[in-house]
Image (cartoon, rainbow, N blue to C red; front, side, top):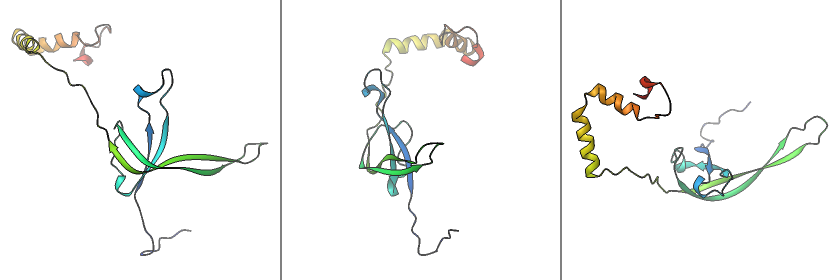
Length: 139
C-alpha cells in the first residue's frame, strides 16, 4: 500500500474544468466545441461556471490504454488537455434595463392605484400569459 512520507512529499492544488466556445461565436447549426483544462496552484478556484475567460497554456496529449472488448485488440486512446498558465477574465457584459422618465411615472402611478395584493396579482398576470393557471407560482 501507498503511505505518505511526511517531510518528503509535496502537494499541489489542481482543478479540472471544461472550457466551451462561446455559443454566439460557434458556427451556425453546430454545437459549441469544448476542451478540458487543468488549473494548477494559484489558478485553482479562480473560475466559476458561466465566466467568460481567455486561457493561455500548453496543449498536451496523454495516452491511456482502454480495456479490449470481446474479440478486439487493446487500443490506445489519446486524451488532450490544456494545462493553463494564465487566466484572463473577460467579464460578463449584461445589458441592464434602462428606465425612462415615462416608465418611472407609469410605475409610480400603478403603485398608487393598486393595493399591494392587487398589484402582485396584476404583475403575475403579465408573466407567461399563454400559460393558464399556476397563479400562485407566478406570484
